[in-house]
Image 1: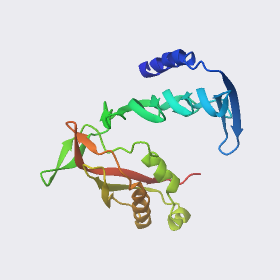
Image 2: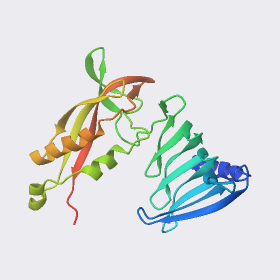
Image 3: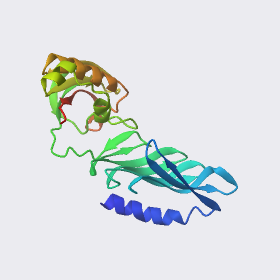
Image 4: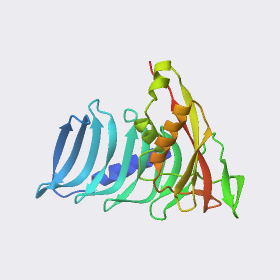
Length: 244
């Protein structure tokens, strides 16, 4: 709440700082169904300058921020769930994220990521265990960590999985549901490898779960212990749920 109140105050101050002569623009699109409202310079109508707000057709705010001479600048806030739950909040400078950004999960604060130092801080486990197998001196031991592997500036791993998951035809026809826990290694440089089934279910579920988790093969921010990057075995549940 404190973060959001601070953001609102900064927005109020910034509204008065973009004082060049501008003209308001409103663009409505069908796919996706969004409305963008922003300002452009009267002398250069292709250059955004001033407050920017993106909403859905119901008027719920999806994101808001500021442009300065065509580039994202100052405070930006991104929302989900009818414009209520914050997902990201932080500052841009010359179109690049800088300093500390607050990251939220379903409106609940999760961690800070500092784009200037590429570091994670204040990670909140929110009731989940922070004990994982980590590699220390060529041996795997179970230990507490500061923060898990993270994907920054990319699509959320769970979103990638849900968007690409294919329900096996035989399981769908038979009305079978299940969950597969997939394990993999993220090393101290953020590279992913060694995808395996930790807790399996139907063989078709197992194969599909490994396939979809393999799509996460990108550069991660490695797990941290005592402020240092470590190699970790990480787990992701892949759920197969029949919807009625």
